Length: 269
Image 1 (cartoon, rainbow, N blue to C red):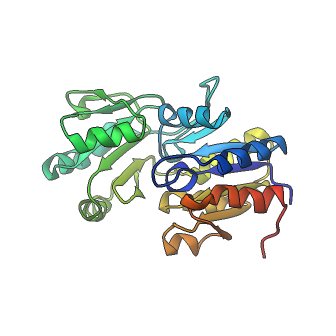
Image 2 (cartoon, helix red, strand yellow):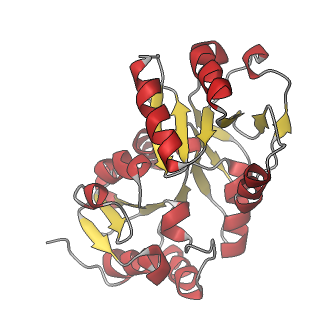
Image 3 (cartoon, helix red, strand yellow):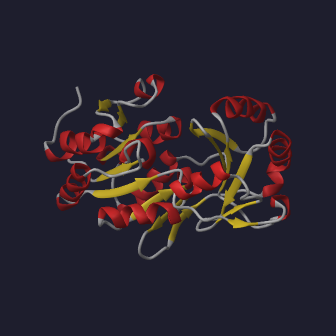
């Protein structure tokens, strides 16, 4: 199979644990593009946090962001796909987070907002993800559609919060996008759904796509793609769902996948 699109998660997949991009990964992605492959960053981050990574890679192109809620292009900023919901759906979640001391933020396609920035760990987290949220007095007074609402806290704190929010039976989707994050998105939204929309727009069949990820929010695109790839550092139950397991994010896992599936035209057994 000649693969035409590679959807690549960023944190824990493309980036090493110190949030860097290896020279080998950058070189391999450029070689894939030379082969005619469309390289798509596919992340829980917003465009404001993904575009600088593309610039570091010296690439431009399509982005699947906010865990599939927005598909756009790094140059034109045209929104090709968007799904969202309203803050009224989250009244119980906002009250829960305030009472539990869990930091939250929420996003429109190109902006991020939060109620507070008075915590050192929170500010370090935003700096790490190249994010600069705007302050609002009361999230529940926001009437515009939002595409993602995020909780940030300890693994233990969010494990409990995840179960508690699930029990609320709200009309939204709650996913663990990392050990310290819970993302809330529109119920039908996923990286897999967004990947299907983008591939259809580009005239690429899903059999001609690969998806590379490392966490639970990557599962739907791993299932949707022609070949779903997990890096070695993924949880065991994520790796069990993948067609191919490659090296870890610290050992050029993305380059390993691109080399085997595209540059060497390896076959999945």
